[in-house]
Amino acid sequence: MTGSWKRLIVASALIGAGAAGCATDEMTAAEELDAHERAVCEFLTDEPTELDECGTIAPDDDLEAYVSRVGSPSGPMRCSTRHLSLDERARVELEITQRQGVNGGASMVTSGTIPVYVHVITNGSAGNVTDNQIAQQISVLNAAYASTGWQFSLVSTDRTSNASWYTATPGTSAETQMKNALRQGSADDLNLYLNNMGQGLLGWATFPSDYARSPKLDGVVVLSASLPGGSAAPYNLGDTATHEVGHWMGLYHTFQGGCNGNGDYVSDTPAEKSAAFGCPTGRDTCKSKAGVDPIKNFMDYTDDACMNTFTAGQDARMDSMYTTYRLGK
Image 1: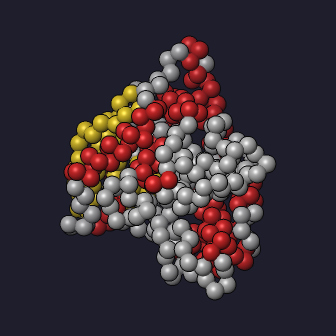
Image 2: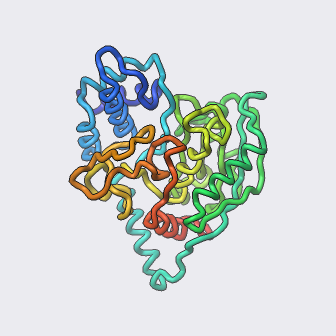
Image 3: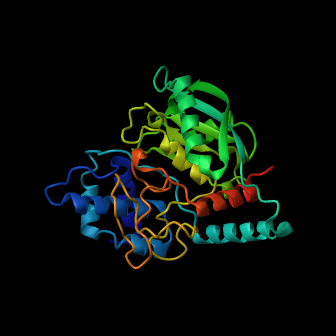
């Protein structure tokens, strides 16, 4: 299977399917889950060494068989925020190091309240989430980030009916138009867009290092049905936003890079070969590395009810990323 064709079938799989459901006649449930984890892994990176490791999660034949069932979607994909290239990651690490060298890092910001502008995108009456759901979502964020010192305060909510923006997905003209029209504030203001993005996706975000290049695209987009009380069970407790805001604050997926390399650049999150779904207690995909998979971490792909943790290392990384790329920008 050539790399380019493999990428095409992975994209097709993720458009038509999410977390693995019932097995086909040819595959067991465990094989199908492995194939889905490989599909997610390959969707999120273009790096050859990382793609090679993705290939060890499930055989090519299983991936191809998994894609053949695209016509029967089995649930949403947690996040479509793609991994930065190795060159971009290296640049980020250099810029963080340079920033920390200023005054010995004494000016590092370690807490604060982030203003939030919420943009509700509807299609007529469809998708018109309530003010109470938005308030609950802010409460979920504040509870999740309480241990980090970061909090979120709702500034305003606007509502726009636009059929194209209602189903906007990452990298489309609809996303660009929506954000150019609605985004408010500066680099340290969170713009949260709520829509019905489709393609089995739950959300995506921009990284802090993206802001200087594309300030109008900065922000987080989540599926309206993922808000507290929404219909996207088991992803309807509000932690899709928690996960995506983690990216906006500078965190990578816990499974980035698999068992090798720098992973998520956080020392106290155990290495993880691939995204975890559901809540697989005791899962250990990098047996040669210390610790079991961090399935309860907000930056994995598990169910909302399973997620409850940011580590001290993630807290410190958010502080350094926010200070380097967002503070006063």
